[in-house]
Structure formats: structure tokens, C-alpha cells
Amino acid sequence: MSPATIWAWFTDPAQWSGADGIPNRLAEHLAYTAITLVIGLLIAIPLGAWVGHTGRLRWLVTGANAMRAVPSLGLLFAVSMFVGPLIQSDLAFVIPSIVVLVLLAVPPLLSGIYAGIESVDPAARDAARGMGMTGWQVLTRVELPCALPLSLSGLRSATLQVIATATIAASVSLGGLGRYLIDGLASRDYVQMVCGSILVAVLALVADLLLAALERYAVSPGISGRSVGVARSRSSRTGEASRPDPVEAPRSISTASPTT
Amino acid sequence: MSWALDHLSEILTRAGQHAWLAGLPLVLGLVVALPLGWLASRTSWLRASLLTTTGLLYTIPSLALFILLPSILGTKILDPVNVIVAMTIYTVALLTRTVADGLSSVDPSTRQAAIAMGYGGFARFRAVDLPLAVPVIAAGLRVAAVSNVSIVSVASLIGISQLGYFLTDGYARSFPTEVWVGIIACLLLALVFDLVIQVISRALTPWTRAVAA
Image (cartoon, rainbow over all chains, first blue to last red):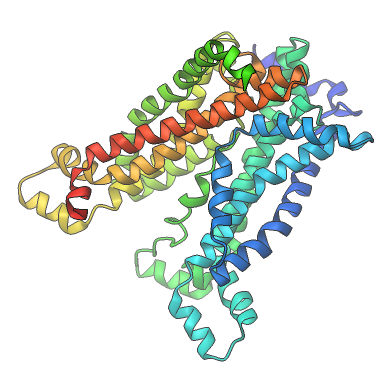
């Protein structure tokens, strides 16, 4: 396999149009990922906020984490065999895969949000109560903003997990970039497999870098320790050592999830 | 159940292959991650660049990595070495951060006491910092072990023999029992890895029990 062969594959006009073209496969992959993450967030945000705020039903988070040990390939096949026959339409291949992807996305999202709320300084929570905030205000104005760094790193690992698993879901007939890998394997077209793998790897890297940037800029400077404007230039002039990012240490909780 | 009993010897053979493909990279990954984590815990700019690089390696989806490695290493696509190398990369990616965190978590007064007693450089790392970091490193290893067992099963898609075979074969034959046997065998194997790491970690840190007793 030479770089020239790979270059020839990518520059072949046939790869850039039609249902099997790169734009369409990439769009499919992004659509599955987006749909899964939206559904996952709709489940994980209320649940995580409620468990974190009330401290009740913590076993839900523990249980969701234990589920991560189930091999995603096995989950994919098992759910496809169960759900697939129940659906009598073109979506018979898509829905089971989305169900599996959601099942895999929820644990990292949930534990990120829960751990974020759990780690809020009790003094900050008490101060908010003392100012006369209602439980809902404490949750939305104090706990959720403070939980944002860990929640976003949960979103980051969930996104990687979904992109990776959507790739192997091509083996249960899902579209997306995984098709190049699985179809290439079936037809012993190693060039196609390698080029598909490059596309998937680049997609994962770009998604991760974008989310890392989001993590940096969406979090309130008061929480991230990132100083803004004048304050930053002054501290760098005086040569004051920048404060270590407090997000850094607890991040390992949610990056610990296996990708597939 | 009877299917599992009838195929017990095949299940055990594949479980052995699976344990090898997931377990050897744990050891190799730890050997690589220890010096990297040590470097990362000592210099802050190295910490940032090492953790970013290993973090990026971890983002590459496993199936893509299994397919890309043969053209990088010059191996055959069916060669289990690809899986070993891929899993080692993932293990290093997870463990470098854990080792760095574990070494940084050593109490500064303990470290100063060691320096005052004449421990320097490598001796202090081996006799003081590393043993005290064992619980944190073991926690990272447990995560890596569970993750490895799950990811190795994906290699059955490209035809590498291990427990994942039952998943692909069961699906291809529309035979749910076989898929469930594969899933349960993977879970049991992950559990065994988890227990082994916990036992080793306990044996290496006798002082944690002395306090509790």
C-alpha cells in the first residue's frame, strides 16, 4: 500500500458523488452521531441533574457505568437481532443501531453530569440557598454551570464512542463511513478499507478537537480559572505562573470510558 | 445453556486467545506508560504535550486502527500482532495520564522526608513514589482492562480469532444464544482481569490494610 494508491482513491471523482460517495457517507455518519447525541442528552441531562441535585437513585449512575463493560459489538448484534424484526420499514437497519448507540452514549453523558453536580462545592450551594434561591434556581444557576466542565468532557467521550461504534455498526447494515471498512473487507478491497479508516480517524480527531475547544470557551472563566482580557495580559507581564486548570484533574473520570 | 456446555472447549480456547490479546497489551502498555507518566509528572510542558498526544491516539476508532496498522507495520491484516499493538496504544493512552496523576498525588511531605533520608532520582521513584502511586495506577489499569476486553472483540470483524467470533458468527447465523454466550464470556473475562488487578494491587500495598486493621 503506497501513499500514491491512497491518493488515487481519494482523488477519484467516483468517490465524491452518489450514495457511496464520501460526502454522502460522511453526512450519514454525522447524522447518526447527532441524532444519537440529541436523544442521549435528552435522557441524560434531566436524569443526571435530578440524581445529582437530590442525591437519590445513585445506583442508576453506577448501573449505567457497569454497562460499559458489555462489549459494544455484542450489544450491537443482540439489539439488532431483537429490535430488527419488529420494524417493517426501511428503518429496520437504522433504528436498532441508533438504540445501541444511545445505550452507549448515555453512561458517559450521565456520569459526566452527575459527577459535575456532585463535585460542586457545598459552600457554593449553601450560599445560593442563603441568598434565597429556590431549588430550581440553585440547580440551573449554580449546579449546572459548575458542572459544565465535567459534563462537556462526558459529551466528548460519548461523541468518540458514538463515532467509533457507528463505524462497526456498518456490519449490521448501517450506512456511514463504516461501509468502506466493511464493504472493503467483503470484497477484499484493502485500499478502500484503509482510505475509509483514514476518514473515520480524521473525523474522530476533528470532533475531539472541536469539543476540546468548546470545553475551553463555553465554561465560565470563574470556573475554569482562565483569566480574560486585561487580567490575562497583566498576569503574563508580571510572569505570574498561570493557575493550573482545575478541570484537568477530575477529567479522567469521564475520559476513562472505553471507545470501541 | 446446553449450547455453551457443548462448545465449552471452543469457548475456553477462544477465551484464552482473548485473554492474551487483551492482557499482554496491559503489561506492555504499563511498561511504556510508566516512564512517560514519570516524565509527565515532572515537567509541566511535557505533561501537556504527552497527555494531548496520547489522548489523540485514544480517539482513533478501533476498527480503523486494526485496518491501518498493517500498512504502517508491514504486517498481514490477519496477524494478531496488529491487535496487540493497537491495544497497547490504547492502554498507553489511558495509563500515561493515570501514572502521571498517581505520581503527582504523592504527599509532598512524604517526598521531602524521602529526599532528607538521602533518596535521589531513580531510587526515590522506585522505593517511594511508585509504591505510593500503586492504588491510582491500579484503578487506571482496571479501566484499561475492561476497555481492552470489550475492544478486542471488535477484531472478530476482520477475522482475528477470540471471543468476538461468537458475536459475529451468532449474528450471521441468526442464533441469539451464541451472541449471548459471547457477551457473557466477555463480561466474565473482564471480571477476572478486574479481580486479578485488585489482588495484585492489594499485595503490593500492605500498608493500606495495616491502617484499616
